[in-house]
Every structure is written in structure tokens, then in C-alpha cells.
Length: 339
Image 1 (cartoon, rainbow, N blue to C red):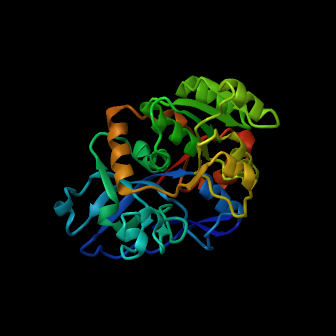
Image 2 (cartoon, helix red, strand yellow):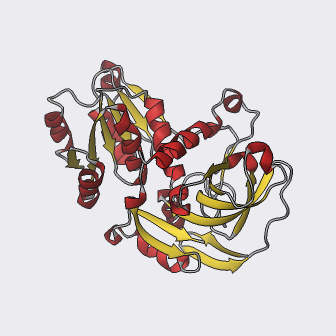
């Protein structure tokens, strides 16, 4: 079985590995079809991804075909079904799990981060982690996880119609936030250091107000909001400086949702934080309900991420392609690996 292993920062290797054993009563054996590459994978390759150990088989944005599952019929599945894979493996027993917050399980393991992921031909996963679709392509299914992260963040914010929301960072996670926020009737703004991505937001996503991140960002934001500032800010860069700067973008009584993750401390000016009685939220991963909601929306055509895919490679070519994708000059928005 072919698999790609990140042996250490900067070293990806195509290797042969043993196939997984037969699935147990609550497990499924699936053939991986498409794998999305995201910022987490790039950070792991560079050696600065939190909660990551080496060697590791990457891959958590997965679509797969069901090969075998003893109890598939009990959950409405059958051999050959196309599925999105929910990559979050919760314990089911901790205080978060008991409250339905499986996305932040105290012992959470994520495929491709804490345990080996889907950059291989066949993988065994819990049966409950498969989300079937009769109509979507494997590439579309591989994008469901990214969209679900955005949907979960918007849910955390409790975004309401008529609110003004700013998305800081317009990579795939930021775009996923935008797509989940748009149907709610919020007025959306976006900022990024990359003008090409802002142009994508305007042209493909219909975001009217975009501006470059920098020294004049707060002034541009005040102009766009008539001095009131956004009531919700979604920080989706994972850049410590950007995360700290985003505290200054929030309106009085507003919310800051940290969707991006960084491996360092961040600081804010407490008097100003208290003066505005800001609400600070983190948003981690997604819930099964987010996957189901997003899957239905993609099937209905109200969410479409296919224009995001800018680069593709086969599993055999990934070791050569991924290092070049990290370069901002490569123009990667979303890369997809065909297995």
C-alpha cells in the first residue's frame, strides 16, 4: 500500500506500508480518493504546527469509498458509497464529550495530526465518521471538512442578520467562514495581505468591502463601517501579530472569534478589552452536525468550493509538489491530492 510519510520537518517520503487489518464491529475500511492540503499540513512540513509529532502520515481533509464495514447497513451505508470523512477521534467520556462538545474532547486525536492520516491508499476509521453523499464528487467531499470548520466558527459567534462581520485572512478557512456567514444575511468584509485572494473574494464570493492588511487597515475598516467597526471579527490567519491586531477591529460589545491557531502566546490591552466588554471566543474543528449541515448545503448548491482548487497532484507526486506549494508566489488557494 502506497503512503506518504512526513518523516521530519521538510522531508516527505513515498513508501510502501502494510494495509490495515479487517474492520471491527464499529469500524469501516475505506479507500481514500481525494485529500485536501491545508495550512496545518504546511505548518507540519515547516515544523511549527502545534500538537504535532513525527513521523506522521498527513491528511485530514478526506473523501473515501467504503470498502467494508460489518455493520454498515445499520447506519444506512453500503459498499461503494462515497463519503466525506470526519477526522476527529474523540474519547466519548470526558466532560466535553459528555456535553456534546466532541470537537474539543480532552483527549482528542485528529487524523493526520495526532495519529496517521489519509495520505495513503486505504485507511480504517470509525463507522460513525463517514458522511455519505450520492451526488457529490470525491473532490467536493474532501472539501467538506474545511467548510465545516467555517460553519462551526460562525455558529460559535451566533451571527445574526444585519450584523457586520470581518474575516481576517482569506485562505480556505476564512473563505469557509464567509460562505457560512453569507446565507445568514450579515454584511461581510475581508482583509488579507494577499491582493489576489482579496480579488477572489470580490469576484468569486461577492464580498463588497475588502482591504489590505497593514498599518492603514483599522482606518479603512472605520471608513467601511462609518466608524462603528464590526460586531464580529473572525481571525483566520493563525498569525500571532494578526491575532493581536484583531482585538482593535472589534466594535463595542462585539465578539472576536479566533479560528486560526498559533504556537505562541498572544497578548491584548486589557483596559480597552474591558471598556468595550468584548467577547473572546476560540473555535476548534467541527461537530458531526456541522458536517451534516454543510454536506446538505453543498448538495443543494448553496455552498460551492470547487473554484477554490488551484493545484492538484497525485500521491506519488506529492513529495515533490508540496514544498513548492508553500511559496506564496505559487498562488495556492487549495491544493488537492488524488490517491
